[in-house]
Structures are given as C-alpha cells and as structure tokens.
Picture 1: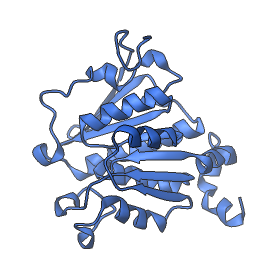
Picture 2: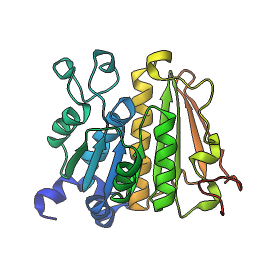
Picture 3: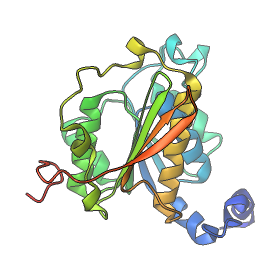
Picture 4: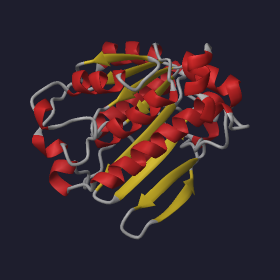
Length: 248
C-alpha cells in the first residue's frame, strides 16, 4: 500500500484484531452481494468502504419510488433505472476497490458461475427461491454464505461456513419449503432503519469472515426485534437428512 492507501485504512490498521494483514485480506477479497434493496444497499456501502477488492452486485430490478425510504443508494432521479447501475455509480465514489454488476436475477448456470467466482457470498435477496438456490450453490462450491433477512421491524442473520459442517445450512432451518406466511416487503411493510441495521450487521459478519476477526455466526441464528430493541442467538445444528449439506 502507498501512503494514501495507508491513510485511508488507518482506522482499521489500528485495530489489533485486523492490522495491515486484515486490510490486505479485504483488498484481495472477492464478494458477491445478491440483492440491492434495503439490506443490500446498506451492506454494500460498508463493504465498499471497507476496501473489498472486488464487490459484485447482482439484482435484476429497477428503482421504484417505494424503495426510496429504505434503499439508501437511490434518489428520485434514479426511479426506473437498474438498481445495480445506480448503486455501482454511487459506490464508485467511495470505494477503493472494484465494483462490478450483474443486471439480472441470478438463476441456474449463471448463479453457479457467479458463486464460483467469489470468495464469499452475501445473500440480501427478498425471496425464498433465491435464498435456497444461493445456499445450495454455496454448499456445493464450498463458498461461505452470509445470509440476512428483514421484514417489518424484525431481522435474522446467519453464516453458512463449509468449515463448520455441524451447524448445517439455510436448508436445514427451513426444509427447502417456502413458509406459508412468507411475505415480501410490499405486502407486509418494512421500517428503513431495521433494514439498515441488518445490512450493517451483514457487512460486519462478512468483514469478520474475511479477516478472521472475532467469532462469526457460524453456528448461530441471530434474531433482531427493532420494536423492543432486543436480540438473541439460537444455536444451529445440521439436519442429518438435509439433501443439501447432509452426509449423502
């Protein structure tokens, strides 16, 4: 790093748990962030500013006016524009790393290819089909997954790490079936700061995974309630019959 880069990363370098070695790991990392909504825009800001070497944003949606209260990279002038295009333009002004975009919903072979090219995947999507597909791809390719979800005032966060197989995967929690009461933000509502909180925590877990700092949520499910400002962590275990991460 030159003097300008050392100055940029100085606050992180001062952290004894990170130092220059941790900053270099961030600069070398390739992160795939799926979903550029309330979760994804918050996570993207902190990941980009943390110095992730290559941050790839994947989302096939366009900006709508209903997105603006919680999706912090967009403004009125961006309505109708592809989210990833607007997000990449905004992040380019604050990121020392490379920003790439995939302007489509990742499915099938394209999803496998994108996961294979990443060192870590952040799931900030808003539907169970994508979450299950990302989980399966990450387990198959042995790529760590940091998954976040938020609805109304509540959020959840977990890490699926191939180095901790005993904790299981996303499929172990939900059995591969979309819950009957699964709803999207457009149907149930969502508070912007709740999405921002979970997106920030998702970025934090991602940085911890890349740098080796602290204790990531490899074996837990973190549950947040913004109305009561309470949180707790549930211990996870692999479902021995799981068709995604089970022994078979």
